[in-house]
Amino acid sequence: MCDVAVLELFIDDTKLEEFKNKRVLEVGSKYVNGSVRPLIEKFFSPKEYIGVDVESGKFVDLILPAEKLLGYFGPESFDVLIATELLEHVMDWRLVVNNMKMIVKRKGHIYITTRSKGFLYHGFPYDFWRYEVDDIGRIFMDFEIITLKKDHLSPGVFFKARKPENYVPADLSDIPLYSMVLGRRVRDIPSVKNMPFTRTLTIRLLHSKAGSLMPRALLVRLERLCLC
Image 1 (tube, rainbow, N blue to C red):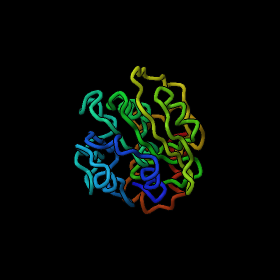
Image 2: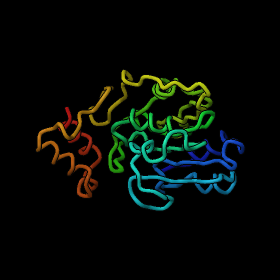
Image 3: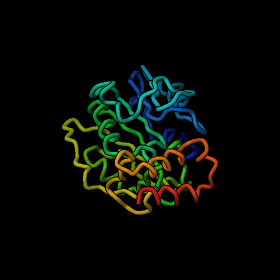
């Protein structure tokens, strides 16, 4: 998923040598309101471009959850990793971020765009987190940050970084984020598996096709009632 501002990031902040003849992985690659893939493939000539997502669709080459990236591809498999508008939708963001960091080669690059507090609820099919500039800075303190800025069109963060030669993973366990479900900054959201049966059913309803027809405000309120 991307918009005009996301495309501007890749036009303004990318360099040919970062992509030319390199392996590129896009996580959350399904075409929703645009994609950076045609731009990169046409003008930056990567050796290989693989798109993964949790469901099939345009620009999805492999159905694979972000939580399983490292196990499937192995460490340091790609020169560039791209994730546009993905991180707010994964419940275990620490696992996903660590997977992303590990599969990028040393001196390789990560491009990320995500949403901040103030951006409306948008479940595809879930919407868990909001990230601020400072949050992304802390989460990627173990990378060489090149670009870290606010989206100038809507609440969000744009980020580009390089994996250092002497990479050592940072401890992310104490970093809280703003939860769209709970309406406050927390370290973790309770797992659905640990909830009473009625709460589990309610959450599954919220994220079903029937739930998608409910007003956004009602969705958020019901999720908070289920998980508080």
